[in-house]
Length: 135
Ligand SMILES: [Zn+2]
Ligand SMILES: [Zn+2]
Image (cartoon, rainbow, N blue to C red; front, side, top):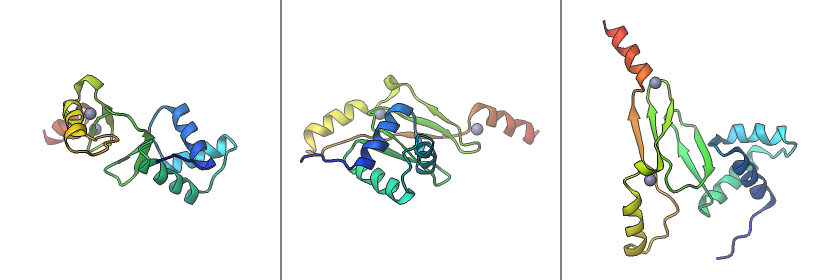
């Protein structure tokens, strides 16, 4: 399948590469405006959806319903605090799913773009807060 990207997709992709971090569609909208590359929100959502389906970017849904987009990466995982929403990235070598993915690629005949793995709980400042509230 040949990939043909629209101009807005290219623009968004370039910005995501430059930023090198996760960003919401709203933030993306603001960043693009600041770079004098203003796109409508509907266009941004359409472009993000197309890029997601092509495996170029990945989306991560946060607990608050917000979706963050970034360039698709094989092994980027987070521990997310349910109380304050802080996301702490795991190191790449800490991913236990990597080997399984390689195996599935071969055996399941499924074109895997990326996988997700997330942990939820309380970060250490929030744990301490809980202790002091409880006492
Ligand atoms: Zn992984
Ligand atoms: Zn926290």
